[in-house]
Length: 272
Ligand code: HPA
Figure 1: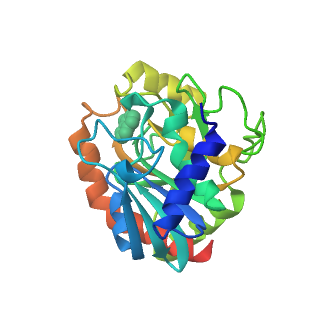
Figure 2 (figure 1 turned 45 degrees about the vertical axis):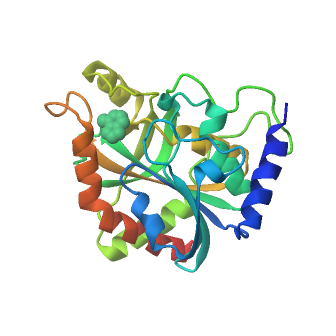
Figure 3 (figure 1 turned 180 degrees about the vertical axis):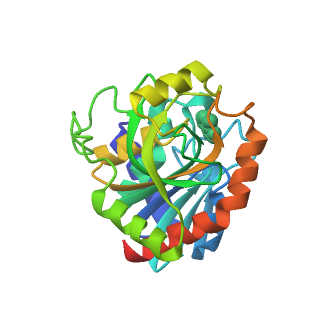
């Protein structure tokens, strides 16, 4: 069986042959936030199913793609459509794109998501800078043999969300008049939304927002030595804080705030 490093070698060789050069920033675009990839200039887009060792999207209906090019003067590789644990993928599969970004010499990842607000001062449509996370997914993407050339056996998660990036995005938000919230993201496996009792627990444990992604990718980014900027879009109030939850509201909210979201990411990329 091929090692992870051998698979990465195959994948990156293919991508380089397709015209993907060195990457500075990987962008992982969450539900409803994928449109940012459409603004990448001199774009090279490659469907996931063409890429060796890449997971094939079976659930979402339409295939995702990798988009490489320039955004705000930075060389970016965007993942338009991420892989979720609840879709049935192994954690190593969910996080494979982050490994690919690192193998293409990215020094940072910008991770975004749609999530539920737990903090009572948040409202749907708010953007939240992720300051830290709680891994409540019941597993960890680094379980298994460690490949030392990728990263250490016991990665330090004390500063997973890069302090300097947090400061810069907060400055950009202030200049632009964007009311950027800050808080702790708690990752659940999904695919059910949480129960009101689980949200009560999440709040007691220190969560400001809950979602079904981001945590695995950030763990692997840290393992790989990447800097991380995490931005959440609060699409709804979490279970028990509003009458009921549904995916339609999640989509509608991202639709409403995507212009502000795109502006925040683009302006921030220019100063990171
Ligand atoms: N919970 C979990 N994931 C989510 C939510 C939520 O309330 N909203 C959007 N993604």
